[in-house]
Length: 348
Image 1 (spheres, rainbow, N blue to C red):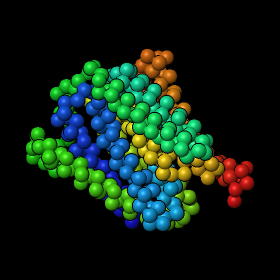
Image 2 (cartoon, one colour):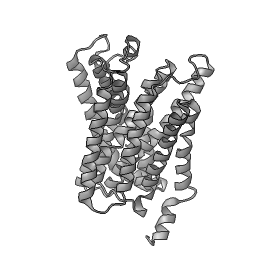
Image 3 (tube, helix red, strand yellow):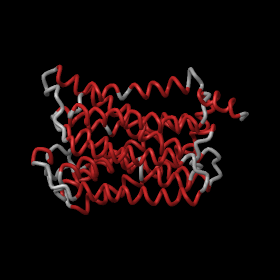
Image 4 (cartoon, rainbow, N blue to C red):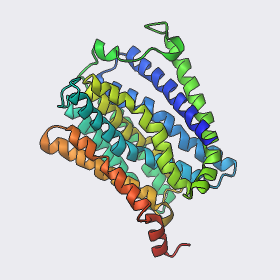
């Protein structure tokens, strides 16, 4: 049943993302807005529904692990994007350039990418620090500031006059699933498909929450650890293969903007929800989650440094980002970070 839930979530993500891409095309948005906002939000919003469903419906149903699933989905997504998604994109560039399908050099807008990463670093660092604040009223205030911060980010992209998407970029979108026979489907059909996609995700997320505890117990891990691994892998990574398709066509700003824009979204909107409605505390119980947050900041910080110092971004730097995901796996499993911290804190 857990696998069924994940499969339906993936279908819902695909249905929703396809409709959002078409909406961006019909509105004739510039490259920054299309890549960093519409494509990014389109792929990130479905995953955002999972922690919301987990916390609200799981708590209502008396699921004791609902908070762990919600927290794992919220923190796991930015970490997955900053490490594995970047690594996959970098590997794709190496493969396609080796086959002669593209140049090994990235053709990216440093302005767009550095802006995205800078916004992410600020937002996620604030989120990490807020985990050490006990006062809930202060956390609510921080959550509101993060929402305003994302609104400012959208404003900056929307008012950027550089780089409107050309006809070739716009033509890269696959046909609308609900209207595959039309090269220009009506707006009403696009909106309908988006609503259906959201419905699939909400229903499947409820199913996922109901069975994640049983699976976690069967494999000998906590629901938090399972959620930190499974939810981002199942929801973020498949959608980011859009970036692989884009780098094959040398649409590098769209490809990486898809990832960095989703990082900004995931570090503000879902995090704001988490601060208000989950146990957002950097306690020994949640050390694995907040360790992910810290490593995501390190990975993104190194990418930002590469852009600033070298004045360019390389595929090698993208691949290196994946190392931090391996570091987290080593800390959690062979090292046993959770148990070490809990023993040190005297928690049984």
